[in-house]
Length: 252
Image 1 (cartoon, one colour):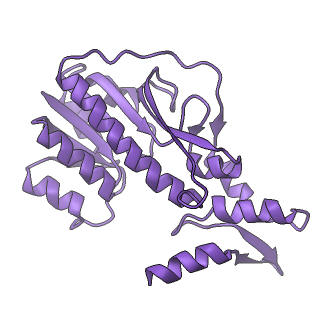
Image 2 (cartoon, helix red, strand yellow):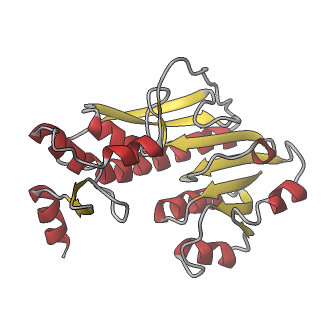
């Protein structure tokens, strides 16, 4: 059994790759959206295990090297970009792991939106890939409670969501390897959340009340990305609250 693995250059993505190798799945190529460091743990693991690395610039190598349906699994895990049909069609089974419940939360920055919207419950989704973003038939949703302290910021919820995605990846791959059909249901309704809109929300307005400002600070805290800010004299001043300060002080 073989696979194409699509991911970002992150530790949690390396965990997924290691699990696939543990299941004796031959990784014919690792498509990395943005290689942060050619000596990163993910890059080193690929080199040590003779796994070919591709990125956005060399993605045509996959298209040219493999016929449609010639790969058992195409897995998108932490891959932040939309995969085209030229990659999706290479797999007999092409699936994605999304750090939010579908169909309610399609798109980008969804854990941040979850905090902004005051959700009490969250979930992560495994779904089949299609030509659109986050619209494929849903295989499974793994749900959990949003705990106020544990999942305080958008970054906190995102990190935890990817941990749950890893659990879902293991469960899904186990089923596939065992020959269990990955039954799925079509998506109906739902919402799409854009990166552009998220960027617009980051500016705190003078008219915002204290609760809105507090929620924005928490939801949009996601270093190293820009968080909530206020414009004064044509300059941005970034906002932080006491709990975030304390949490980071404790880390130091």
